[in-house]
Length: 127
Image 1 (cartoon, rainbow, N blue to C red):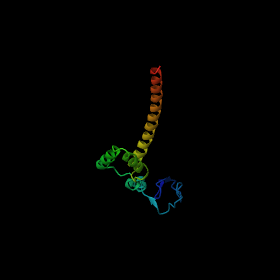
Image 2 (cartoon, one colour; image 1 turned 90 degrees about the vertical axis):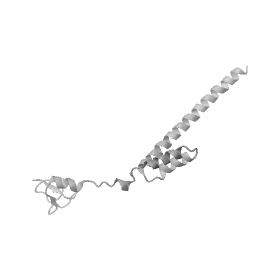
Image 3 (cartoon, rainbow, N blue to C red; image 1 turned 90 degrees about the horizontal axis):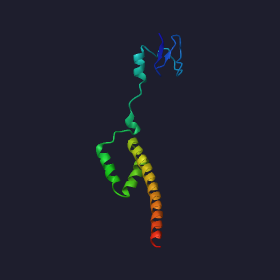
Image 4 (cartoon, helix red, strand yellow; image 1 turned 30 degrees about the horizontal axis):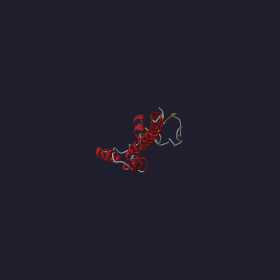
């Protein structure tokens, strides 16, 4: 019967005195079955401590409302992207800022091209 390390859950040879994976002593610290080893090494579900809390509908409504107000929306996006403790809001803020910059650059390019065509049309009408 293989020895299961109580520290990391790795299977070891029956004659092993130390775990092949983590070098922890296997003497007196073995688990009786693989089921117990799986229970002991399962990661804790502490997602909340990582800032991955679920964002409530009220918070999303507040964010969406703030994004409809000119100039306040840019401040809101910077706050979400760089200050927010919630990973979901932070990712949303960063993605929205990236899209805002892309739209801004495309708008500038479009205005420049449209202005050039407009000036050319005015020049052709003045002759």
